[in-house]
Image 1 (cartoon, rainbow, N blue to C red):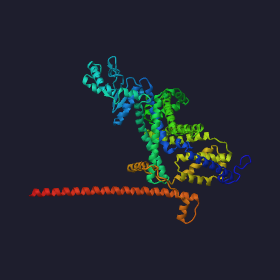
Image 2 (image 1 turned 45 degrees about the horizontal axis):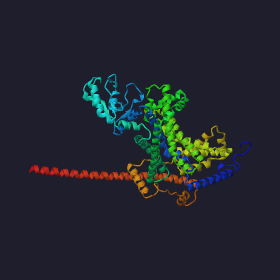
Image 3 (image 1 turned 30 degrees about the horizontal axis):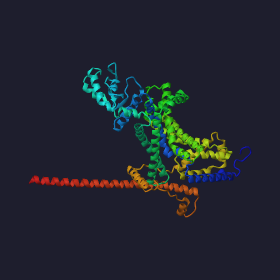
Image 4 (image 1 turned 90 degrees about the vertical axis):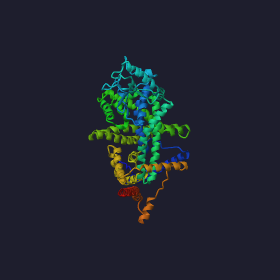
Length: 627
């Protein structure tokens, strides 16, 4: 009761009341008309489908963090000596591609310190206009400048097209006694290292819009996209199996979603780094530092400590940045370094929003959606991407704090898990919060409470990866428990959203408790899936096989010989499919065992034949000896 009025004039269950039924029917009619109009015009009416799709964007959120971290390095390309930093990055990347253990170590800006470390050898990178200038940059007052902690000269790395002349110049310097500890001019080749790129190539890598810079970004983006492919593909594969689909269809879906997420990552990464080369990072320097200063000093230090402990949400580049001031983290250090991370992630997030919203932008210019609809879709996408990035950061810190109770290894593992879950939850929460803000309506108390439940079921369904069938079962259970008394309890609660989350979470966990444990497919299965997809594409067929839906009530009637309620039939059919998954996995195990036994039998037969052959040879040899 409120102000003497019954919230539900029909009494009993609010979902069965006449007032709510009419509202629901009217809403369903409007949605059906909008969906049909969209289908006819081929316009996407649900912007969140791309912006907050958990299966696809669990990996995309990770790519934003990696792109933002790499942005720290690329932002140096915009400096006057940017080509030198570009040479460091390019040579390090190419060394890694050749199997070397290569790292950039010059972020600490130590006096006469090394720029790179390759297989334990410290290296100074010198990329000047000519060989004489490159070698001369390693000397000061006719004395070599760069030595390691043991007094051993570091190598200098010069452009590949200057190598021969640089060696000759270094030989002259050694002969003059300008390199302490080195007297043999022939050791010049040991001191001068041939870079993997030329001087002009390094300059073009540092510039925006050149073939070299686009190629460099594309190759680096492909490395990150590989991880994104694995994350998104694995989640989709598992969800497909939980949906009751067979192994082949699950692998197909995982491969398609993984490739889609990897493509988004690749394009957004290239766009992020090209924008940085254009000076976007410098424009955001002051706003980013101002935003970071709004955080308490203790929070800034905690964030940077998380990076130093290996929080993966911001990649190796951010971890190196966090170490630039040694082990002690000062307030100024935390402010400056976090500001660099923030502006890098802002650029990466903006690039990702543009990539995700490319279809809407094209539709707007082609007159298929209005400018208002485009603004709304961009707002929702921005909320999802921004929420995901923030969720990864918060999740990494929270997970690292919990994992630290288990030791240093637990800190890293906890940060990884926390970043992953935080990105998923943050993306879903941010996207739905933005959409809710755009769609805000005033409703009476009873319908508003139901609306809260409806709004909370979406992020929870995304967090628990509920499929359509599982969500239907949960809603059936919700209708059963959502009596008038339960709504009164919810209205009186201090936090109605928390009340809704607790109620819905209990129902969701009860349902997903029947899910089967998923085992990833073998490499052979992935290859077979790729061949199927290629064959369907060449034949002009849909990549994914159409799914047939069974009628649970009809199945129950055929099995039991009597009618059962639809909720009970749906639950029974869901559990049956999960049990079928177990059977199929066991069947696959038997096929694998059979194949292994066949191989073992073949090997045993081969060994038996070889043994018989050797025995015959020994017998013949022994017989010849006696004669």
